Length: 443
Image (cartoon, rainbow, N blue to C red; front, top):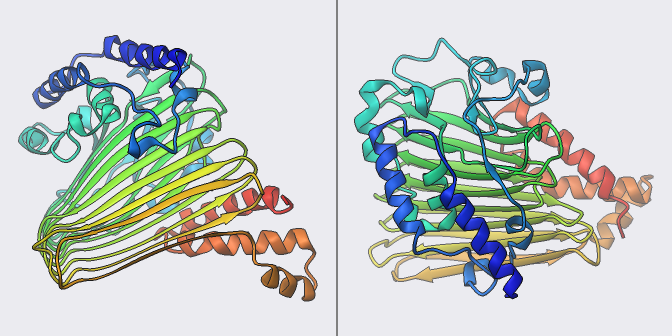
């Protein structure tokens, strides 16, 4: 690492450590912030010399200077975000602008009894004890430098509580909107979701931009599922192509809990999503799907850990990357089967499509097995559009551009079609078709 980069990274971290933040909203936030300050004192920015970051240099991110985002939302109208809204979540929507809660864009009413969908700053007082128990428990500040920075800087986020036995029919839509009407800034959104026993809900976590600007979104999500709870979680990242997106998330699964997720990465100059799914009791199931569709000079990095700590767990993971131009995708999928996690059933697949000779994918599936009665498999494949499939479509009357377009879309559709909200599936299909239209003729 060059001396100049070392100075830039040290300055980036020092500036954010010294940034002023609003007064803590509640006691647990203040305690977590104090802990983050102490942790940050002994941390540095990761570099390509660190194994977990060796494929993703952060120079373009740290060479910028950032302000911390205000907790006052900028003026944005509902019409400005209309293309992102989902009719299924008409009354179950939280919207945050540059990290600040926007009540006039949100719509939370007629919720099922006991369901909490609220900004953390307005969480009901009777949930203070729950916040104290859960906030920072699953993603503690010492997880990495970005989690520590989020813990120190966040001033707003979403709190979701689904009481035991409640099956919520509407999806919950938590949207983080970025605008570039201010100087380059850092937004530090936070999500805490707690599902009780036998609870069931669909959560759409979405990051969008209204214009192409430079900013950093540094997000943290903590999701806890009680026994027999079911969470369907779709995460969509379509930030500005000039922005940076770093996110850390942990999901903990109780006995026989089910977690089904799709993470779609479309935007950002550099993006990194680190997801840990931890089985804390027997019989839990996790389905973790991912899709990165990038071009230009984008970098999209996904790191996952599926931690089987108890017996009879099941996990399925499919991660796909479609990479064009000079873009670069990274996938590191780690599956851990601990000593007591007998009769674990786990399968992981990484499939990658290159649309140019300059596009790159680094994929690293990992299995760490410490039990002897398990069924585990993983595999990875990287290639270009199949010449035989292309010939077949051309022989049926399609020109080469349209044939490439169709094959590229079909590659992505396997993940998109698993999104549980119909209007969001349509939105994503339109986005993917638009992207593939532009990329289809790339040699």
